[in-house]
Image (tube, rainbow, N blue to C red):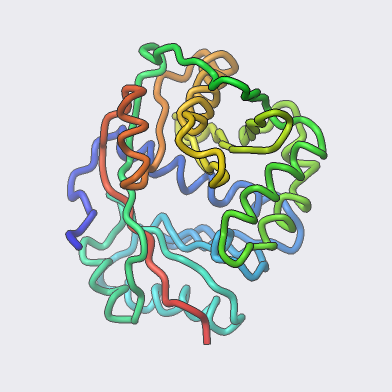
Length: 273
């Protein structure tokens, strides 16, 4: 797998990566019993939950002379606690050989995604698929439906997802929260979700997911558009939308007008032992 590091990232790429870091750490910064350590060139996010969905190491800006020691320290934190985690490497990660250093410690790349951006002013219109309804999550029942859909997309189901959003309920229900969630239903049944996070100077779309029986209906596209249109109206000063796209999702986002701007790779050591 080729390196994702960009020796000379543009301000736009830096903003996309900053949005990812802020999104991943936002809830954990606010809640008791969860922790975010940000300093000395690294961001460590520990939810205390048994799910690598919410335990991350990212935002590395390490000096080559001290990088190995800092990597070992961060990895040991989760291994000693016996909690799974992943390490996100983006175009701005440093040192330039950080992927080699992670691989030497037994971490393997499990997913590569493409960073993509769009000018919000050029956002095209799109139609909600027939029979579907999309709205911002504003009630406990809607939040429960959102989290259960995400949890049961995993095999086996990741029940930590339900616990996480339940604990974050009061935070996410705040009207001015920079993290906003969207739920699509089809004939009243929860079918797909997306999330918006405003940070790093851009509107980031995250957590786009559709239940298996409702796929190939355009729900993911419609939910992405809904999140961006919400951002455009709620934050008129914002001009850029951003996301990280899987290989399967990239063509969907290209149809909306997104353009690639860099690569992101997620590394994992596998089960902690």
